Length: 198
Length: 198
Image (cartoon, rainbow over all chains, first blue to last red):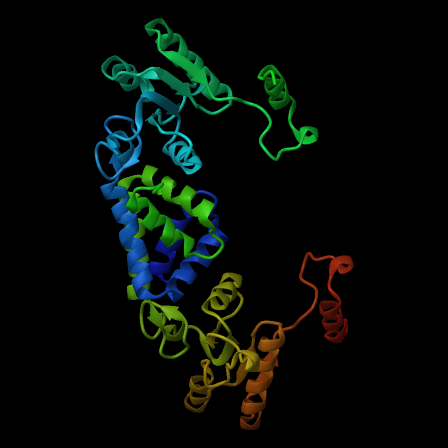
């Protein structure tokens, strides 16, 4: 026994977090011991509350503490455009941009036959239901630019196309501030493919 | 507002930990949302318990959940040797080695006139008291090999020397598995200075 039990338990808890190995966990646990008691109790409370109070929005699937979430509930936003993303973090990235005024649909994953994940396993069926009920004019597919994300976008696109809703995919190309010299060939090929007339 | 309040509070708590910036804090907070509820509640409990149940041993100053700590209370250990370290983590490092069977004294810092830290501000006076009460034959000064650690070792050594207790300082030199080529000159100079006859 190297540590008193309360420390070793805390170290174990920290080790469960991603990117935190045993040494960092020990460092964090000892840091906690030197923190103000109020801060530590707040931390504990925030952990429990985050898990208890947050749920998925019954409309779009985004993480929220109200149902429907604030974005779905916002009448100022344009309900005729839905942006489909894989993850709640993607919604947050989009919201940071502040340019997009439509609504969202969070899939919580992507279709991946290799991992046995089909369209029924992610939040696709509620999206289809939503398209029947709501007056949606455009669906922006903003799944990740990788194999699973592309497959998911393709699947949704084929499923929804017959309904006549406009379907778009976010552009792939060189990131702003990037350097052509260091771009990988797939990105470069996508950038060339997606070129626009000036 | 990008995050529901329970998330942003949790992100704030994570940001207070060392080495965790805003992006990592967000990643950890979202990870927590996907963890099993039991694990999260355990984590919260472990945090609060670590802070509440742990105290400093009244004898040696090590972090403990019993007073005196298990090391001070262990009759199998040799009470005639005390190893003086700066930090509870140093005790744990020493204990991992499993070679040392004496007791400890944790200073919780080092003398640093630049920062206004004198011997009275760290756990030195209780050490002097301890040396009066207990039958100590050797004091091993294992403070860190830097300016503050050396100054602290020197201070304690001068203070205790008249009592006739043997005082030693842990060796400084090349780390095992290290490479002479890459050693800094101070370490190399210490290694040369501390050379032993074979």
